[in-house]
Amino acid sequence: MSAAAPPVNTPSLIRQFNALTKPRVIQLIVFCALIGMVLAVPGVPGWREVQRMVLASLGIWFVAGAAAAFNCLVEKGIDAKMRRTAWRPTARGELSDRQALLFSSVMCAIGSALLYWQVNPLTMWLTFATFVGYAVIYTVILKPLTPQNIVIGGASGAMPPVLGWAAMTGDVGPEALILFLIIFLWTPPHFWALALYRVEDYRKSGLPMLPVTHGNEFTRLQVLLYTLVLFAACLMPFIYGMSAWLYLGVAVVLSAGFIGYAFALWRHYSDALARKTFRFSLIHLSGLFAALLVDHYLFQAP
Image 1 (cartoon, rainbow, N blue to C red):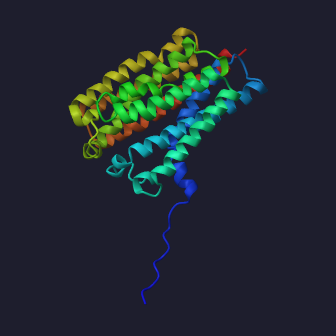
Image 2 (image 1 turned 120 degrees about the vertical axis):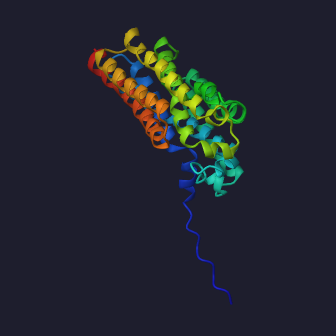
């Protein structure tokens, strides 16, 4: 008689579904949306405004998680070829296509309903448009067709502060568009730094990422040029009057640091330096928006 097979130690179903939402990415999305909400409210928010912020953040989290899950479903074959993504439940076959699609659909429906009925219709439609932009236009169309995928598709990733602003005001003001511009210009150097040291993964996957189609040196130059343009965009909140000197100081230091990493990467490439540049880009954006938040309450709020 053959011995019974040992039990398979697999993650729980809840953990698998949670992994589909790309929790770290969603945290940054909700954080940026929350910054947009806070900056849209003059002074310290009252209880009703705090309630709206919580509900809007929850709705955006649901829809963003749905988009991430749909992305995992569409790219399961590509994910399986890349070390960075091979662990995802869809890539490993731990979740079926039906389970992933149903999960994404339910998440999107719950988030959209929450935003429509508890926040406002504009925020719901903008968030749904962001879902379509990322899950369909970027994932299905742009990503496999053009090395400029992350530039064009970056518009979806830059939407969170616009969503937050719309949630609190019911419209999209120039302040929200400034925040959008910062994230839009931040996305290419952030992602290309990752693509540089993961280039073999992308080459095996067949995706036309910039380091694959145009080479390492060209990509490094693009990273440097984008950080220079980003520096100018990061000054706009101060120039427009959205922030005071605290934000300006932080923006200058962080942007100069990002340029410094990009310049070093351009002159003397190494995978280790590309990885450090990628990690610093996360510090740059998080620190920038945190400075906007602190500046708002210290110098802008009555």
